[in-house]
Length: 123
Image (cartoon, rainbow, N blue to C red; front, side, top):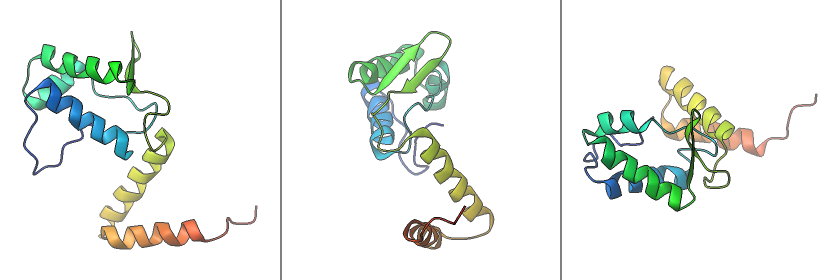
């Protein structure tokens, strides 16, 4: 998942790429523990050199927003996001289900508000 709005210009510098991922992390679009694309994939997605993508990832790591581990890749650092990985996954599932049924954003948000306000089912 590369967090780019379809109408936004593609990032071209390491700072642009870092800013893009920083925004996705702070907004909860990328949740704690969620894996970022590989450096190679990010470079391909944005049409930049791998060194440029790697520089962006290093900047995010220095800020404490991501953690990179050999063989595990780069993941959002614990506590860096406003949303945990499972919350982001469920939000994506809600968005996908709503879109598949033709439901708009406002209606899906209304459903979430109603569920949030209702007491949990007796179990």
